[in-house]
Image (cartoon, rainbow over all chains, first blue to last red; front, side, top):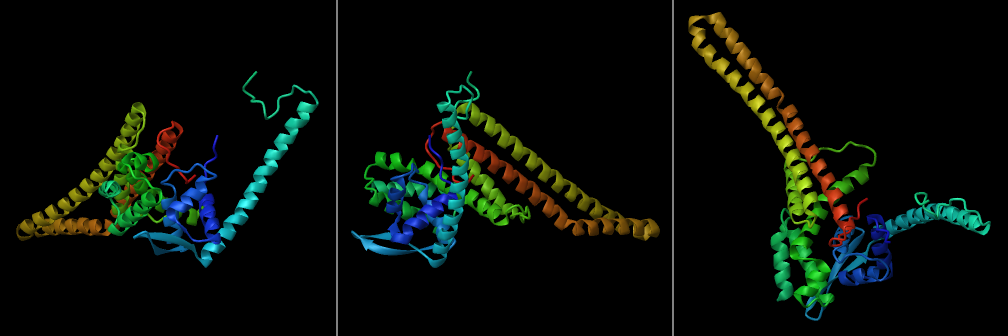
Length: 126
Length: 219
């Protein structure tokens, strides 16, 4: 079971990587693929959008007789990253509050040996 | 050479984008293949899909992205200025092309094709009817003026009546040009929204069915 990355989170991931160093296209995909299943064609539109919003700039550097396009975060890109980070923290907190609540309830019921229905058991099974 | 062939195929499959946009995508994916050491056709297709599939993905992104940024900046305010009918028709066209190359199950494909076909038919009929009504009104106005020119000499008052009525009809016809234009753009706009809606439904469905994995990152 995988939870799909939304475009805001993808923006955040890319900007976050770029705060450490400049990356070229393939390397960014590789970095994100270490943790998440994203298809190889996911990043191009993301990078294009970030560039259009001027959150990153590009420059070319020769590499083995060809050019590599590097992506560099801008100042407004960094501000955007901070905004995404804030939003993410809040989101994460809200989700966890609800999840943890349900989880601890389920544990209590288990310990008490109750056969009461908990959220962990599907309401649809008898 | 394999890579360049793939890129050339990709380029020929990218419709409705500017040369700059096409070249940018081509450069990005050429570099991507070099860096990823995708040296055989099979390796490339395994990672990126066929040129057609990749082109579809890129084009769909262009058409949907503009829509997404629009709604996200305007939030709840539905004050979306209708895009020109020309951009909208281009979007419809791109999505139809995208749908045609989508690997979906046959029954679903037929259903969708019927939906889209009916929608386009209805939209088309509406536009044709509006144009026909407008055109006939103009014709009636012109005819009245023509009749009046013959009558003015023999029966002056009848002639004046026809001339006046004809001019009024033409005048109204000129005045409502913006209205007609708005109505037609509205029809095309709604049609585009509907087809985009269907397209999103589909691309999500085919994702779940384990078809080629294309992330739908918007909602």
